[in-house]
Picture (cartoon, rainbow, N blue to C red):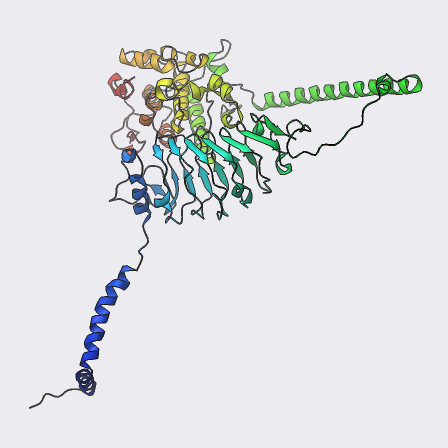
Length: 548
């Protein structure tokens, strides 16, 4: 008996029998076409894939131990990988002061469409300028203080409408300044100083351009009118540049029209006589009197301003309270309050000035003033970009650090400000002036850090603290904890130091003096454990800073 089939199945079977060759061909065609079509489907690379491929291009990629293929670069706004900036995705790459070498190939990073900032400052990359114009969404590019060389193509920055900050200072670029820089509509900051650029400066018409630095190149010709409101120091070290804000161009300067001048009659150089002479000398006397009056007004203004400044900071500087003979000593509570305030101020500078290698650069007790409630106010910060190299190297505390030595390559990093803050902590706790600040460069024999380490090694930790520092009961343990933080900040090897965020977290956890059971613990990253106590710590606990 024939099995019953529904009409649809019957129709399909009939059609299949009649068109069997066509069906077989169609099946074969589809089986061949599908894999080919699927192979053409492009799966977007993840940020992790791009970063790992980029790491493979680096000559010393072994430094990137935290770049684990099994983990994600970002967890929310927190970076799991070193040097990665996160906001639920990777928006920036900040690999500064790592001693990276070789040629910089950014091609693996091109698929990262959310990338907004790239920084490789203070490394040893060489070779030509890396290709960046395919990063159409980039806002900041920082390549200063490397060894890049050669000419930059005129169209190197074409098609980058969002680019705001470009730092190419202190390399060996030559040739003319790329014209595409002048066409960037949102350009705010441009640093080309310390290279070998030649020719004339293009005309930058961006209304929002706040800072343009061209000093120490081989540029010539008149300064474009659009840049004449810039600081004269931005053009120093270019013998051929002229016009405001520098000296006027001579008739031989290129691009300046020569105006013929008729010879002067020698007789006309004789002094005026009669009524003309009287008018001349009267005018001269009036001008002299006006000049004297203006000088007096300026002196009075400066005096009034200085009086106002004195009234605003009645407690003078921290240095005067620590080292002046006629000053009452600061107690533990006040010193801890000052250290916490300075830490918060430095953290703020690190957040607000991310492009600077040393956001402060000149941290010392005389540059910290105290208001009437002993809240610290930071001064003389962010001066490095506007100071000459010679002056900075001779006087700024950042250049007294261990890493700024010929044997270390004379470099400064983000951890240099951390070292300066550590020295400040030791100065506040010991009451001793860091004499190494009086010498040029780093002198371990006069270092306050060396003295503290030697005292701890000799088990004389109790003799380290300033005798005038008084505190609550049970505060000695917290003094020792702050001393440990200071020494951790002063590790000679900068990679062993904590970063500023970790320092702030650890300092914030210190208290004025409580019971021994009131404290949690901090590990070397500044995070909590449950085993930290405020009991007196043995001198052996300072072993982390003994490897000088």
